[in-house]
Image 1 (cartoon, rainbow, N blue to C red):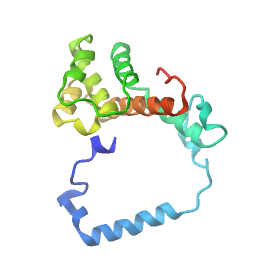
Image 2: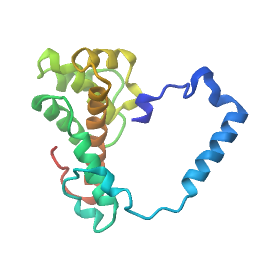
Image 3: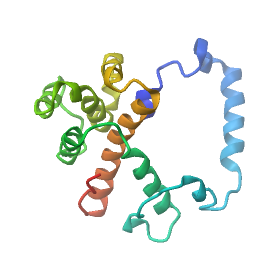
Length: 177
């Protein structure tokens, strides 16, 4: 998600290159990271979570992961587009997709034209987020114009990849969301 949403210039005017800005930000970040927090204390803020994955056991990671899954699967894609994205992700072995667009074009052929940009963006977010272009985002925005919808499409793709990776690591089948 970060590689899709952040450009090279994180701050206006490319201020992240300033030694002073980097120093101040580093100190602020360090203070935030070093705070003592009770594990699971923020879980009530997550709202509707769904079931925790079995691999998380009793850890607070389980409800947090479930909440992320619930939020990420509330996307504006239709069922057919979701299935295309999930099939593409489940067929991935984790390596970079080949150069070019044939790996995208094949799965998208089965979709109605209106569903292609959202599915394309979700597939890119899942399998090659570094290849998302402004044109991909603009095409998705024609059908899903709000920022919230754009984030949901991206989150669906990102979470599909995350769930697939978790399935590969734990030896289980990825959950079809």
